[in-house]
Length: 414
Ligand code: LLP
Image (cartoon, rainbow, N blue to C red; front, top):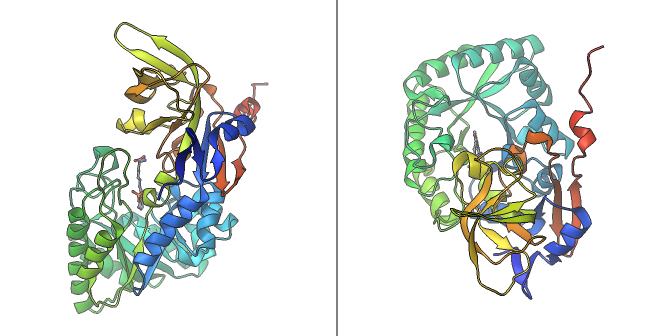
């Protein structure tokens, strides 16, 4: 299914021409397709039918309230990593009892807020965290449901910056420590052992690392069961890759089929924390060409979007397709697509053949996940507007920041 397509040589989001969006809301702007998000969620949900599953959308991928609300209306749960993400979920009517709290550095205030709202589970990542949680839950007179995030020491074969399941990363508790920590958790009156969790990395394009991690978690579950600690759920994290260029990520049917096959008829609810696979290809970054700059060594298209708006190319050398919003005739030339930020790493794409002129609009594709959420104000650049298209209508779902917004909370010395 393609929710961004050319109609008479002009690129559209669902039925809305991107030219019209640029005229109404300006550039750079993130543009999302509601239908694309709904399609991705329903596809995941339907592929799980017949199993006891909860999909917990990973809020960090795209935390715009409209995106969260579209997913909440479909019945999605959420995976959060901060008090800020919890507040967003609650603000859109998301359900705390369908929300899991992940992350290595939960603060006291964040734990309190999550306990007060009654989240489904804390995915605990260290012994210190377990002790802090037990103490705070006891103070509040609550019982905290916990999973331990185990580090299965599996190579996810993805970019090193987004690999999390290897021993040398900061994530999870070492596999060997987990039995002792489960016994400890089970002995603490303010904790309730609820499940087991892993998340081995992001943008995985093979099933084997997921299966290897799951096998370790299942082995663990079975051994725990034999000691009388019965887990209610197993959380397989997120990480399923998408197609940016020519990757061939597993189909949902294969991915889920293999995982469910391993779990067999164990009485475990299965949680997933997909982020990118639900929203990555449901968004693009719309930008306008400011200048063309022809050099001896390279030629550049200078756009009004930059690394502060979309960091992935600079940070991970990530490849995003670049499409002209209006197709032009004429010979193509090879360009690096760069922004106005004062860093050599400020590029959106390299070595792309384009027929382009100043003033043209470009769409940086597959920017729905880890786009706006990783944006910054570097170089005092206001962050883009966000627009969600729903059929024939484009809705502004976040105002473009104003320059005044950027320093509204700063103070001069007396
Ligand atoms: N669960 C946990 C505990 C996570 O840390 C993550 C992502 C997810 C779920 C969702 O993973 P997904 O399904 O989206 O792969 N900024 C990087 C990706 C960082 C992923 C961080 N954790 C990027 O732009 O590629």
